[in-house]
Image 1 (tube, rainbow over the protein chains, first blue to last red):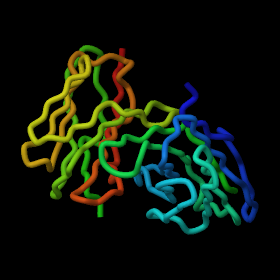
Image 2 (image 1 turned 90 degrees about the vertical axis):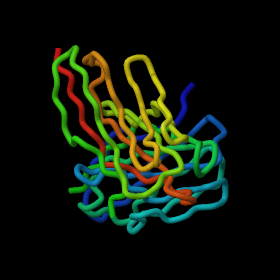
Image 3 (image 1 turned 120 degrees about the vertical axis):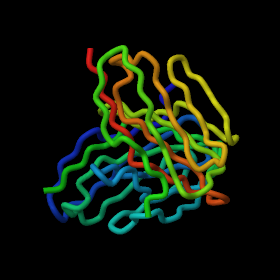
Image 4 (image 1 turned 30 degrees about the vertical axis):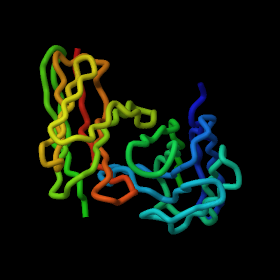
Length: 114
Length: 111
């Protein structure tokens, strides 16, 4: 069981560069999420998708874009990388959005912007 | 506004000791989830509690949801080095579909 797979595991970007963080899940979950985790700030929701074809902003969406064209994939795009985007990024999925539907996380992408 | 307060923030203990960590709020939660995150990995669900006063056991881990559904605790008996990690609580307050996260308790169990 692969679960939620994130690539790459590590990446260093220069300011102004762009990149896409990939996330795929094989559990046929309807909902997918992108979080960033920073010391002292905890997990903060960037974007989520309740179902294929829909996306919604979370707490900290600025500087990021997402798309959900398939059930399995939920890529996160950084267009103009900034040092403030240095973080560990986690993708997660759940059967549906809301209660009693726990999140399954990938193992994260550690991004450094210099 | 941090709706879920976790304490202590850090805890370092010796193997074999018992410990309790807390997840508190002034809001009523319809359910609370506990996750453990090991270094370099994503959080993994341990348990979900949904009923006020509910107690769930997972081997040496005991989870309790407060009667008023505003707080929860995690008690570990005879801690092992494998229990080391970041313990996170998360929950849905009222009818809010978005999951609210605590900042976590970082536990180190020394052999």
